Image (cartoon, rainbow, N blue to C red; front, top):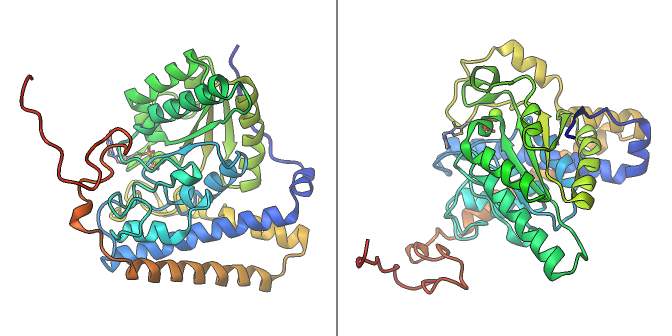
Length: 361
Ligand SMILES: Cc1ncc(C[n+]2csc(CCOP(=O)(O)OP(=O)(O)O)c2C)c(N)n1
Ligand SMILES: [Mg+2]
C-alpha cells in the first residue's frame, strides 16, 4: 500500500551525527553555487553567454541536500536548471563556465551550453532542455544500474538514480510513462520534484491538478510520496536519506516533493510580473544559505570572520573559473559532428558528417 508522508524537521542529533565539518562543507557548496550563478548572470548581461540560461538561486539546499544523501556513484539527471546539481556533484566550476561561454574546455565541449551540464565521470547525466524529457532517462538509468548491479554484478551493489524535475514536468506525458514503467519494473529511481511554485509564469495551481498535494500522483503508480521543506539543507538531507536507503534496499521507486522557491526570474529575460514583491520577500527571508550560516554560528561557534572567509574563497574560485573559461579556445567547427553518437556504436567520431540514407523510406 502506498503512502504519503511529510518529512519531519531533523532533531538536534542530526548535526552531531553528521559532524560540523560536513555542515560547513554544505555551506561552502551552497555559497559556491550562489556565486557561480551571480557571475553567470553578469556574464550573460555582458554577452559572454548566449542562449537559454536559468539560474538556481534560492534552490541550492535541494541539490546539495539530496546529493549528500546519495552515494557518489548514484546517477543524477535533471532538467535545464542544472548548474547547482553539477556543482553539488563536484564538477569543477570552470568546466561549467566554459560550457556556457561556448568554449572547448566546457563540460560538453561548449556544444550544450547552460542547459546541458554533463559530467559522466561523476555520474551526472545532464542537463536536459525539454521539460520532462529527463524522467524517462531517469527510469532508463535506473534500469541500467539495476541490470548491471543485480544481473552482471550478482547483487553486489545497488545504485539509486536521483531524477530531478520541475513542477511543470508533472503535466508532461513522458513523466507519467516514466513513473508507470518505474513502478511496474521496480526500478531504483527517486523522482524528485523541485516544486518552486511556478512553471515559467504559471503558478502551480493554475496548471496542475492537485497542485497543493502533488504527491497524490505517486499513489497512482504504487509509489510512496514524501514532502520535504526545501529551504533548509539539513531538512532536505534528513528527509531524503531514508527514502534513498529504502529505494536502495527495496529496489522500489519513490516520489519526493521538495518545496522550494527560485529567487530570480524563470530565465534571464523574465520581469516576474506574475508574482508580488511581498511573496518574494517572504521566501528571501527563508534563504537556505543564511539559515545554515546562522545555525553554525549559533550552535557551533562559527565566527563571522570564518563565514566571510568562505565567501572570499568561493568568490576567488569562481573568478578563476571565469578567467579559465575566457582563456579556453572557442569550440572549432570540426567538432560539429563529433559526439553525436556514442563512440562505440557510431563510425562518425571526428570525421566527416554522417551520410543521409536516401534508399527506402
Ligand atoms: C516540452 C516542453 N514544453 C515547453 C517548454 C518551454 N519551457 C521551458 S521551461 C518551462 C517551465 C518549466 O517549469 P518547471 O518544470 O516548473 O521548472 P522550473 O523552471 O521551475 O525549474 C517551459 C514550459 C519546453 N522546454 N519543453
Ligand atoms: Mg517550477
